[in-house]
Image (cartoon, rainbow, N blue to C red; front, side, top):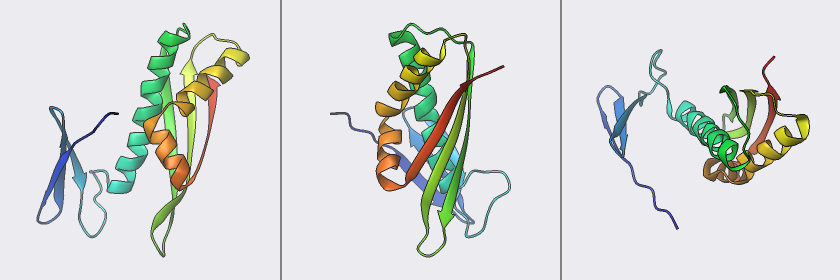
Length: 134
């Protein structure tokens, strides 16, 4: 079993940082919305994107599927009262010459074995597509 650990802090008027390993991520913890820094919901969507992209790389090696690059676009729909993410959708685009069958197998592995994908799928409606770049 793996164990993850981060530390985070906030200082007035709402500049926050989270530290994991040797890296620091700045984020918005103000009562409003910062125009520059990501807010906690955007960090959660970024975690999903990172999980999926990490598995793109991992399963390209395991399944021997070469690719040049991958892009992901993630959107979340937030319920207001109580506040929670009710729906998350992603669109994964990969620059590869793989056929449709292998692309489907790749996608299933990317999602099935992702820590963040599995966690979010239990909490909200998580849907997405995978396509090759043209």
